[in-house]
Length: 335
Image (cartoon, rainbow, N blue to C red):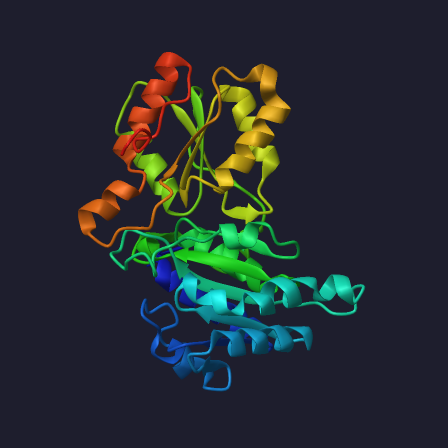
């Protein structure tokens, strides 16, 4: 077990997979120099320019090349510098790569991994701070994972590279510098679709993913009035229904903490599923804590207000437990 930052866990996972499988190679803008977050630093020196390929600024071209290479038996890892940049190349992924296995009746597989920096809180402005999980959740044939710490980054990335279908891995920019213990090697691999129980609790289940796992944990640790069972989903497609249902059946309450905006957020599906399966066991309505339906502000104080904070999570859960009703969001009623 080694202590490392999340960005170092990315490098370690990529290196381990490249060493174990010569068909694994990397493509992306400025990855040879490590990229803006230094998450591929040192790999071009270790594996050479034939396996760490700096691409032009043409996402449509190099993501399409990744789909083709994967269909021909390679295992490309394509990096989008920011998740927003994939917009010009979604056709290559969502209507081509995601469906090759289906359209070919299993003759072709597309073991393609797409890595992308995502998320707000770092002052990059609205065009470089979105999480954009909504862009992928409605697409069959794609898995979507969002790590929350160095261990899940290492383990989920290795699982993604080994998958025989496309996997999108959203790497929160705010977590690249987080430190944690990492089990490397085969023992450190985290299965796609498996949630992680962060804490035990009896009053409420908090479901989170990525950076909001840290927000939920900070909220829990800042008070002593209630206990919470925090579930880190780790994977949004497919999400671990069994773990969530088991926890909510135990606590009788569900709070989902999302960085996504309210409309179309992933928590809506989870709340719907819980209501339909556990209606008679719920002590209060499932509640979502999200960001508002608005562009992410550039100003530091406004961006901080935009995102769910641990203080806000505590206030919302306090009201839920006190009244048994779903509290209003802070922006509701604002002019």
